[in-house]
Image 1 (cartoon, rainbow, N blue to C red):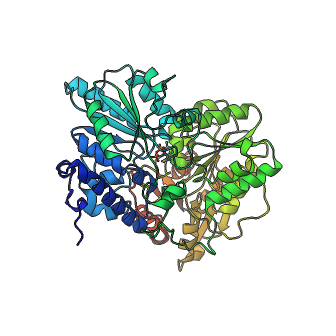
Image 2 (spheres, rainbow, N blue to C red):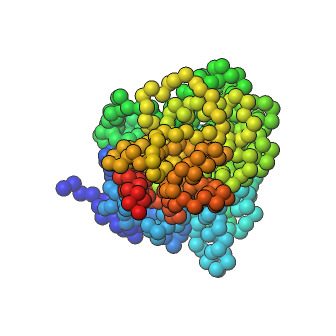
Image 3 (cartoon, protein in one colour):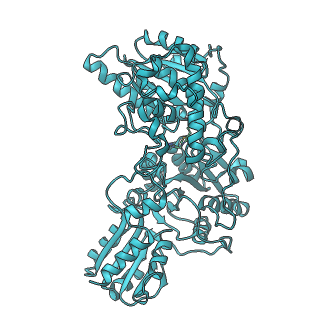
Length: 592
Ligand SMILES: Cc1ncc(C[n+]2csc(CCOP(=O)(O)OP(=O)(O)O)c2C)c(N)n1
């Protein structure tokens, strides 16, 4: 077997025993290790390849885990995981019961802070640094590593603004590779682009203006250079800022050339980076593509349509609209709060604004949804992608709270299409004189129909639909989980007893339909791919209580706990939303 340095690194203590000459060799091995595993197990690639040298230098120079190292977002922390005792289980990355794809406090003492959403590292590390001062631990180091896309977010600036007037021993490392998932945007990006290795922005250095000691820019792939600057930085108390320039995807040519695709490329040939053909022929489109393509169709006819994405043009497929109508589609960077209020501002001027945000990321703009959109009853259309379970990204990314957190907001309409045709019709209906804010939630992944591109049909807001007649028990589903319900009922011998209704909307509810259901059925099951507390099932329970219906009601959905990562089949089984669990629930009720 080839002699390996990496095989002997069980913790940063082992790393610190190496000579500095050995570190570039280790970098090579670490890079290969990441590539080999991600090539077969999938996951985030480019970001981790870009910080291999930085990761080694950080753990070599600083006394982790006593010195506290916080990664922003955390999708770049694979090297960190491998060097901090998780090498031999790294092949379980993102799998059920395996390693999380992001740093997680319960996983390792080296994971100083749990992440997944961006731009939190500066605040978290500052909090730790202030706490250390209060405890009298003045020599402890606190390091936040944040990307150039994430540092442009409001929250990162709030942290910098506070840190600049603190005496906190904080080192902010800007990992500047000029790209998030898609190329970074905005004036700050333009400013950073002017800074080249060795050429510090002298005039109007905005970081120095915020009272930080500014170092760099330095080459983030030069371990020796990084170690030298770290030694210098260690001696300086107070807030410090190191600007590091790196290349996303470094060391795998294809990943360097197509940084967007290789952010999370799926399976590929490790030696060449060649992507393995994914067998998508004959499969339905992804919901995101139905959304993106439909929006272009609508925008061609309705020139009032504008679209906004906070940093996810590829992931949300808003790139179709950006290509077709560049002046009417905006990538605002990782700035969900801004995206929502920007949409509100545009709506005041009579534009029809589609704000495409993943369900999990809208959480960050909750006050903007209530205060800037809903109170003023502005008809902004929220397109909530990745609503429901999302699989391997895990607890930080599941979009399971939106029904609960939106349902309590007055004026909101909440729709959940059961398939792609319904999604198209909702998108179409929303631009026809909408009077309220409206959220349309749809899942990650592929739809269920090949014939998705049908003539548009106007839908009645708040109207449900019966999908199947039955005699004894009614299942009311909302959203794309209707497919599992359909299959579950079809699998039953007693299928004739079971009716299936699609609520279509969480708010307003189709009260007429619900009165019919509760007058007819003594047993009702609600099914949603969202959190049970405060969710769609709760809305049905409230309705039944308000109208004194005594039917037995069973609610299926995500229980009151955070659901970890795993593939969708596994996760559906865990939360009992898979076809056979739904069938069993129906059977057990019918047998009562
Ligand atoms: C609040 C929030 N919005 C969006 C995302 C999706 N997202 C994950 S990584 C990423 C880009 C991060 O880019 P950057 O900060 O430059 O870090 P790098 O990938 O270069 O390490 C985005 C937009 C997120 N994780 N959190």
